[in-house]
Length: 244
Ligand SMILES: [Zn+2]
Image (cartoon, rainbow, N blue to C red; front, side):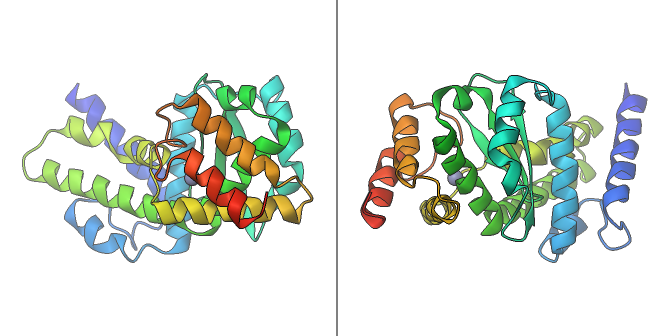
């Protein structure tokens, strides 16, 4: 068992080494925490990409020929490069209503959300998630997750078990990003970004309000909804600002 875990750790480091120059970032306990603040944009992107790849492999990712994938591909066709970002969009075949973005520009939409929303309502959610990437909220979350991972490794170094390392790292970082809750200011800035995105492409900005109302009505504990203020307040704020 120990041997397997150790092998896992080595593999993980090899994995990271592909994405990152390990001579610049040492993967090994407390030094990670000290260096996290100096993670370059490239490092953030590479770490995030590794984390989302792992997360995708552990979740019910829809294949390209799935009807949900086809619909999302149709909606996002002209948004693969958006506002200087390289984005990729995939569906998780999960009933819950959620969507999230990671710092590398990966945006994931859950089938449950797609079932409840019209095309333009989904486009608002997508615009909102692009906002979290563009405004670097996702980058801050990645850094926080990286610090937490480094802190766990420090615990391990001072007498924990190897199992702790194996169960955290990238998987844990991905989980933290997926479940990230954003501040009131971040949410409202992303909402505005989402509405501007709608206007820029000639989508109906009123769908931003109805999308938030749907989230408010259905209430659930997904990260999309666990934000402050509540979606109903966000809907009112957007309606007021844009006179919808
Ligand atoms: Zn958000």
